[in-house]
Image (cartoon, rainbow, N blue to C red):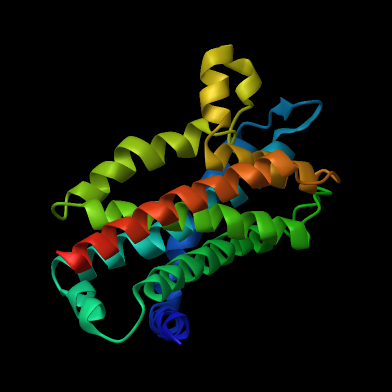
Length: 243
């Protein structure tokens, strides 16, 4: 029941701010597509660079949508509205509150990625998006939603969240297999970046879009991130409750 309550709250928030959320999810990815895809007119891996770029931007949008949907709101609720303290003294199981946040963030990530798919429909790229694409977006969103939960719990003030975005999220946006292949990097850097969730999500969505399939290794990496950060979130909130 606690999960449903959180999802209902997020749904009402989505309905209330529908136009703002939609425009925010469109602007940056659309600029990437226009500047890098249509503007540069390059080739990559023997095909139009746009075909390489679109799956990466879809993965990037699912990351930003999921992280942004959870991080900022949860930080404000915890630090200023004291909503987390109210959840702790309520009958709602804490794990349901966290899981609800993660599912809601994942769904927001899917919505952000779906917007990009709709925007590129008029362009005849031949890319394929199917149910597996949405599965990867959901897992990618779950990974970054759990990261957002942990970061929002650890934030000391309102500047910590933008700082984390600048130091971690923004570099990943450009380096994690979204705009260029990691094969062009030194082997050590390529291995480190390949282990990040966005790299795996971009790679798998690109493989699916080209008629291939998602790799079990990539799915396992995403699930590992979800499990690790979910455990950290549980540890934080239950330790805080027991203080």
